[in-house]
Length: 181
Image (cartoon, rainbow, N blue to C red; front, side, top):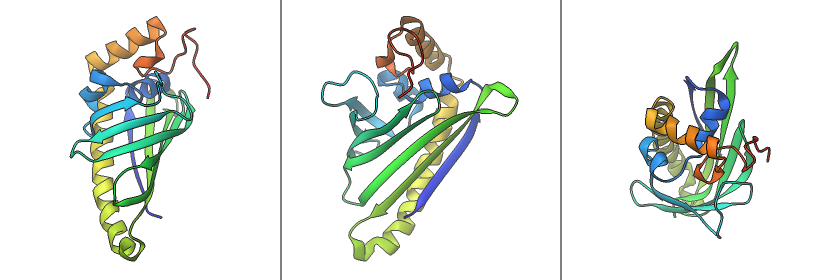
């Protein structure tokens, strides 16, 4: 099963980095070049384990994915449940940890694994898929890094944190305390 990984260090603490990674709507569109449209399914208003999302990728590919883990501010994991004819399976995990000795900087590591279909084509398709997915994930994490320095994104996350509304993609519950999934 091929695995691709991208990493970057951003100038914000892990809780802010996590909150930025979970933004939605216009705030998300400011930094995430992968997504053309995205929304929660089944009446969900915020991210949590078991919540499903519908995503339209920038080239128009559609995917339904499900949160398989949600642990603010350290990590989040998702798996594709419905999507491209190309992927049999696709899953990803994003981790956020403080940089040693620097509590105001975060190491973000995004790792994806996948298998391709049809099985007879998988040996070639997975080599090509790894190159394409690596390029997309590298581009996406660079956008995330820019988002962590974007005053508009930072203000949106701070405003959502102050109001306690996690539906805007923050890692805070309505009580204002960090949620542990």
